[in-house]
Length: 419
Ligand SMILES: Cc1cc2nc3c(=O)[nH]c(=O)nc-3n(C[C@H](O)[C@H](O)[C@H](O)COP(=O)(O)OP(=O)(O)OC[C@H]3O[C@@H](n4cnc5c(N)ncnc54)[C@H](O)[C@@H]3O)c2cc1C
Figure 1 (cartoon, rainbow, N blue to C red):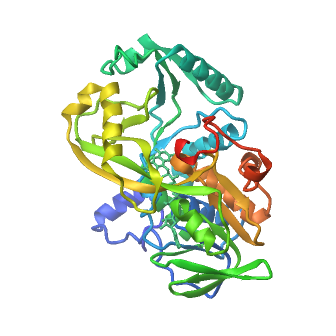
Figure 2: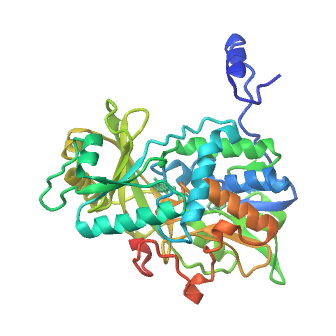
Figure 3: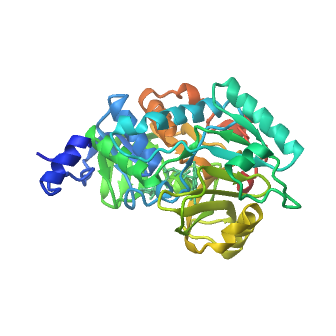
């Protein structure tokens, strides 16, 4: 009998029988002619939506169609940070729902996703920034989310090696969310893929959606590189490619695609316990369980669908790192890579139906969609199954840019590359 469930007993049994009984984590499905729901995009959000559609909403005649392999998109390219330290009422309940789902995810999926609540610390460098963090921390606590304001001494006890007396950017303290942390990104994709497959979902890899069949304003299915696949409902979860895919259905989305890069150094002894973000530039860092320093910074700043970045941004990110922790200059960079970000006009996502009946959109995740994966999947599944928004995702409407109901967490205005 192949091993379905991961447990200490199955690990021991497999050890005794030479690891011959493990099944592939999910089937290699071939497309059926018709489904109740087709999800386009097998990233974290598409897989999570399929999982919750089957598990919570009883819809298992579902396919996820992915043009590459599972984990080839942003779900396998991000810097793995999860947190719910938001301030706006439209955002806090959504991201806290996600945090709670992260906290139970491994038990729910029976999969080791290496959820590590090691703490996320946002540093502040001026009195004005401290006041803004006090406000954010208070908003979080009023919604039942943990937040602690630390002074310089408390930060120094945690991270003595930061550059506290940088003449331009002295560290004055930080806002800490202890329940934030990191989750192994590709394990999230694999865990949701396995969970969805176990509930009967077809995961169809290496198959590109190339068009939509729409009759009298109603979706009838998708054209793919392997032929037509019929569906009563279609959900788009294409992250950086959202606008490109939606344009095949005649939709012009309020999104711009930009490249975001990330970096990892050679493995060194553990010295960064949590996640630290620089408050005076765009730089954030953590240390992976293998010892590599994982860090990133700003967008490349021009529109692109290429999954690679340019050198001036590499220089900018490294400058941020050197200002915050000069010792980073002594380690060698191992790898850098890029992913395509679907930047929305106000920096917040969209989980909504489109003007085409039966066609739904999950997009606009900007820098921050990994932490949203469980809640985005749940809310997208709710929307598709019930045809109404989930209570914690009501703010993420597609028409808010027309009606003026922005969710501008950063207060940057309608400039996608600044969010
Ligand atoms: C460098 C980097 C660092 C990041 N760091 C963080 C972080 O620390 N914390 C955080 O919260 N977020 C972070 N993010 C953002 C986060 O990774 C994304 O917002 C999130 O992963 C997007 O959702 P997804 O997982 O579904 O996307 P993806 O994994 O990109 O899934 C979309 C899928 O759609 C598929 N697709 C596209 N077009 C088609 C088509 N025509 N037919 C079929 N399939 C198609 C793609 O191949 C892809 O697999 C980061 C992103 C990057 C690039």
